[in-house]
Image (cartoon, rainbow, N blue to C red; front, side, top):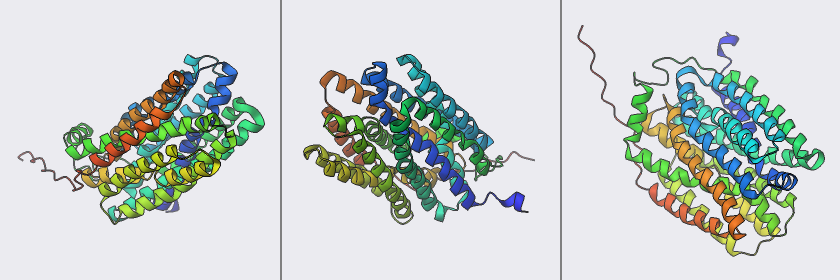
Length: 405
C-alpha cells in the first residue's frame, strides 16, 4: 500500500519544488560568471551574452516538445534526461576555450536541459495532482521554490567562484544538477488517453485550439515581456553594478535579495490568484515593474538603492508564473498543461534571448545599458495593456459524435 501511494500531492509538490530550486537556482547564477570568464578568455560581453541568449532561446524552443512528451508519456523520464543534459552542459561550459564552444555548451546543452527540468514540466504534474480550488496556491508554492533556488544558489555559486575559481565552481554545480535525476522519481505519472481530463482530445487538437483562442495569444504576448525583463537583469545586473563602482559581492547580494523577496511574491500571487481575477493581477505586476525600473534608473546608484530595487523587483519577479499558468489551466484544462505552457513559455524565452543579447550588444556599442532599461519600461506598459482583454472562462468543447453501432 505504501509503495503504491507514496507519490502524494505533498510529495510531488516537495520534490518538484526541490527540482525547481536546483534547475532555476543554478541558471540564476550564470551572471556571476560574466566578468571572470570574459576577462580570463579575452571575450567581449556580447560573446558571453549571446551564449546565454541562445540558451534562453533553445530552452523556450524545446519546451513545447518536451511538454508534449511529458503530457503523453509522463514527466519522470523527461526530468531524468534533463538532469543528464544539465550536468554535461556545465562540465562542457567549464572546458570551453572559444566563444562557439561556450555557446554550444551553454546554449545547446543547458538550454535543452532547462526545457526538461523547469516550470512547464513540473507545473504539468502539480496541476494534475491538485484540484482546481487548490491549484493556484500549489503553483504559487512551486514558483516560490524556484525563487528560493535563486536566493540559496547565488551565495553558494559566488562562494564557489571566490574560493575555488569559476572552473571548479562549474564542475561543482554539475554535481548538484545531477541530483535532479533521483528526485524525478516522485513525479512519475501513469499517463493514459483520459489522463487529466483529456476528453479524447489529441495534442494537435489542443494546440490548434489554443492558438485559435484570442486570450491565449494575448497571454503569450505579455509573457514575452516577462522574459525580456528578467533575463536582462539576471545576466547583466551584476556587471552593471560593477560598472557603477560597486563590488561583485553587491551584485551577488542584489540577485539573492531578488530571490528572497520573490519567494514571498510568488506565494502571494498564487494565493491572490485563487481569489481574484488573474488578468488584473498580471496587468498590475507588469505595470509595477515599469514603475520600479523607472525609479531605480532615475535615482543615484548606491548600495541602498540597489537593495531597495532588488527587494521591489523581487516581489514582482516570478509572480507572473503561477498566474500565467493558472490562466492556461482555467481556460483549457490541465490535460495538456505542459504542452500549452511550453508554447507560452517559448514567447517568454524569445523575449529572454532579445533581452540578454541586446544588453550585451548595446553595451559594447554604446558603453551603457541605459537604452535597454528604457525598453524594459516601455515593454512593461505594453504587457500591462495586453493582459486586460483576456477572458478567463473555461472553454466549452462540443463532444465528438459517437460512431453508430
